Length: 173
Image 1 (tube, helix red, strand yellow):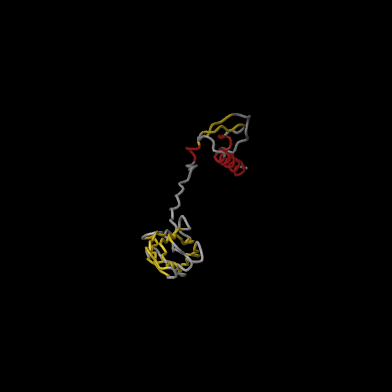
Image 2: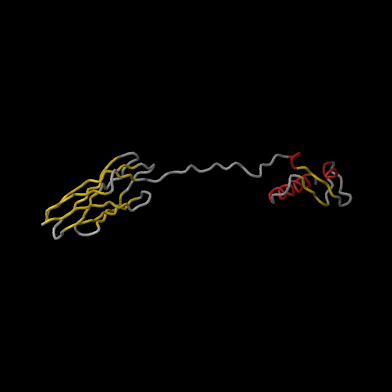
């Protein structure tokens, strides 16, 4: 019988604690000294139990913040290159150098040109943190004349993807 009352008291205290109530709670219809002495409960009375006196309960456990991880991040040395004057029909190449300054490996998924006259090639393997590499850009001036501006879009897992690389030139006859 004593075990029953102690279990009941524990469940009542636990339910008050789980509901986020104050440390001092009122329990109706139980006379605590009767339970402790294994005497029958005489009459419904109101008793006050201080939870702080019986057990220490931390209602807000310390939650550790998750560390913030950066993703891959690409930093180009330059994003615009000017070939200057090119004879019509000539092809020119330039390598846009970059570095992965992020925490994760950089994976370039594709490089697409703004037109058929501009193509790019890129490393197919992941670029590790702090590793340097380059994207090659090729401009073919066949069928072009005067001032030209084309670009490559670099798609990757880096922040702010895609990145735009611009090629400028003046095609002369």
